[in-house]
Amino acid sequence: MDDHQSQPQQQQPYPPYYIEEDTISLSDILLVLAKQLKFLIITPLVFGVLTAFYVLFMVSPTYVSSAKIMSSGGGGSASQLQGLAAQFGVTVPGASESPEWVYPDIIKSRTLANALFERKFDTYEYGPQKTLLQILTYGDEEPEFGPDTLKKLAFESYNEMIEVDQDIKTQIYTLTVSAFEPQFAADVCGALIEELDEHQRGYKTEKVKETRVFIEGRIIEVQKELEEAEEALKDFVDRNRQIQGSPALLLEQQRLTREASVLTGVFTTLKQQLEMTKIEEVKESALVQVLDPPVAPLFRDKPKRKLSVLLSLILGFGFAVVVAFVREYAQNSDEEEKGKMRQISLLTRSTISDLIPFKKKKRF
Image (cartoon, rainbow, N blue to C red; front, side):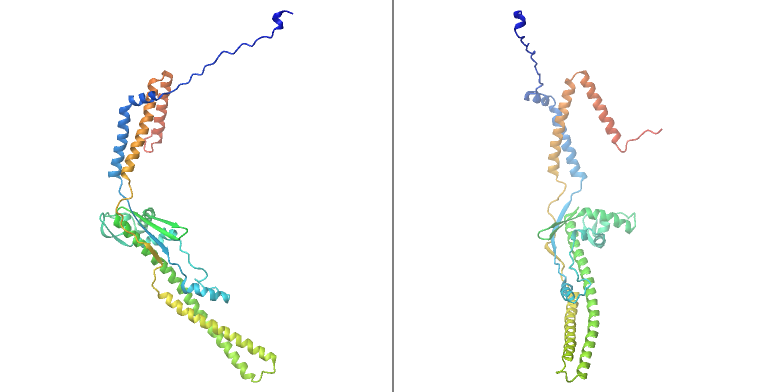
């Protein structure tokens, strides 16, 4: 064998591959920003000026007044009667459950809103003693719709004005009212609390009235049963003067005596509950406890002018930086890349133009 064939063939090394990376240095970035410096200054200023004009002249200021409230609760005589009725297997109307007020739903209801729409308020913009319905709808102009339509329109504005937050742990509600004047916001918040208390008082009065009517009916029935039981006991005693030697007669007498005694207790308790219910019916106590009353705010809540202008400057600068790098890339790219950039620009304009709702379309 030849030496050539006996020696193992040596593998030839692969040719080296070099990976070229396009790196961007800090100087490149600063150079691009320096070339577009005028654009970087003008764009944020335009954004800031437009935002300042908008928040100063286009947006009406909003003032917020808040109050903290809680329900005094209590079922009154109705809840006390529940225990007595349960002993005798009787369900008392209005006493089977203690009312648990759901303030957010009540405040957002049309019933409470319609009552508040009739209240009158003083404002600088519309003058003194204008109804809330007028303030929220037609203002100083002549109404174009009927009362029902105006109330529907006002109800939408009403829901935007009112916010209710509940603290689950303490059962304290925070009621906030947003309006275009500080004192008007406080007045609406106070009027809303009054209407809420009146609504609860009406509900309570109705339930107590139902309870009183039920008790009066039961008193008549129990009194009749008691008279019959007493008459039966009297007749038994008159017919049976000597019952000491008869166990059956003694047992019958004990039964009649026990029945009359129970009915006497029920009658006495019902009479007591009737008096308590009458007192509860005429009691004038606040059902909505105001922890922090509403006050007129000193400063507006919206718009936050300084913050809005600052955010617009930051947004404008970011937008300018992005546009600056795109412009620099477009200027330094080859013809193929420039063609792609022009195509991107045309497609973007065409899409935005199609999305404009009031664009006039061709008729065929």
